[in-house]
Length: 187
Image (tube, rainbow, N blue to C red; front, side, top):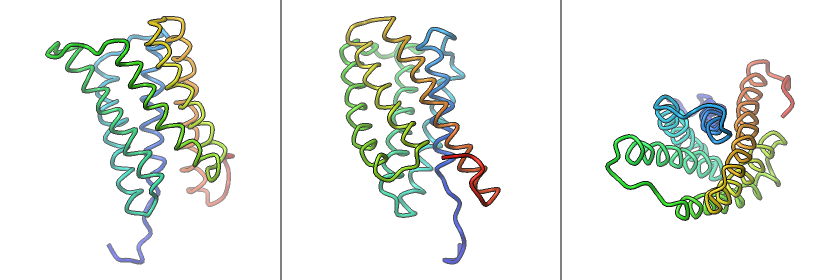
């Protein structure tokens, strides 16, 4: 590729992978639909691999934030899908305890807090919504697992659907605005 060639923006792909899989998983958390192998496979590939690839492109483009966010959340999805495969479906490993799940979600909440702090300074409003709702989601999930509360898990599920839809909206806006060469979708 020549040094003068324009590279595409990987953010819409990463946000779409994150958003679609987040909505689908949180439909389960909300008690609306059961999670199947389909959701976990797409979680692994579209939520996971697509975000990791988007993150690597972001790093190459010089964006430490984009690279860290997409790669981190992509690996989260790959790890989650692998855990479900090994523990729930193949039953070759014991499932994590509620306390361990609570700790993991809490730590992902911490990771998301410091990324949210960055987005609050530099990001468009749509991306701020994604990160604020994701921060809330991780802490709600942590509380739900710690308390072993279906009510909190369902609440987290509905909040996660909002988070995922906001990521899909942001992805769509980035692509539509680029294609039209002007702001069509408010971000």
